[in-house]
Amino acid sequence: MATTPATTYDARALPGIHSRLGRRGQLPGNPIRQHRQNEGFSRDDFHIDFDCCQLTCPQRQVSKGSHGPYPTSSPTAAPLITARFTKGSAGPAQSAPGAPSVRNVGFPPRELRDLQIRVRAEQQTPNWRARYAVRSE
View (cartoon, rainbow, N blue to C red):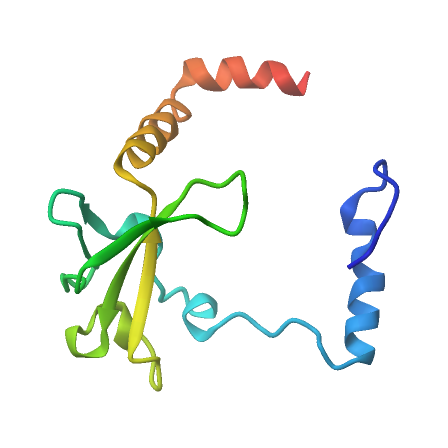
């Protein structure tokens, strides 16, 4: 952790933080294999069935149920519903050799997910981009 004046750009503190972490042997590790090789899944790759409380992964494996919504660690973030895939059901639980026997995937409640889809689609329109461009002028 580093404390700087509010006017200091965050990236300016990063070299000092990395230096101190390096001296303690606590530098962040490299991305996981799936990330490096672009083999992982994103939340948008899953089909969410809110009525059955299940997720279907891109490999067509169905989650073993879901739980929540649970509050997140951030007081301003929306709660997440958690779906579980077990190694026996394949899907994301078997995406890497030696992977854990269970993988959990978090997703927002239906109302928030619908809002995200609508807003993301709107952000692709020329009208939205023109309105947003005014901010950078």
